[in-house]
Length: 191
Image (cartoon, rainbow, N blue to C red; front, side):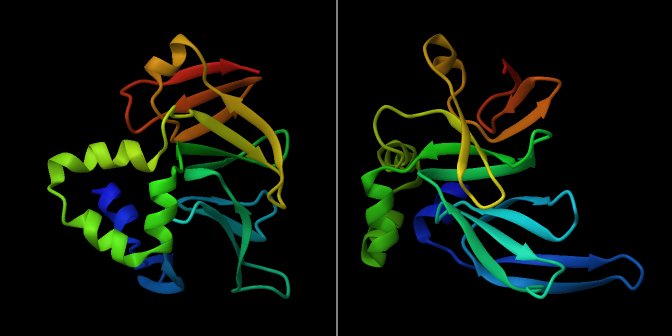
């Protein structure tokens, strides 16, 4: 299902705020392309979220004069998934897959998206491998608060056959715990 959302360029995603005291939901941001992964900064001044389809990390300001505004923090080379704050500063982003040329074209040309969506569902997985480029890279990035790459964790060799993608990275006690929507287990990477 998530692949159809990416291919279609669906921008119906929203950032919502729920108030349990009065049981009300408020829309903070709309028009988002597959918002995914959400984390609050350590000081509570903003939220970071991954916009998977566009490959962007966005910041929604909660406090400061910029409150209620959203800005782009980083444009990534792949499809970002979940975000976690790093105890060493910055934040980790799992990159589900590298973006290939077909993904770039489908984002740039809406007519191509419509054409791809007419393909039978059983062939969509093949399209997915083309969209993510050949020689799939399995990576996670640690980014600074202003979106600069601080560290790259890349899976190589035999481990690459085990980990097809990275959905989430949790840093704890000098190690990275790695999760993937495509794997029924966790990986451990020592820093």
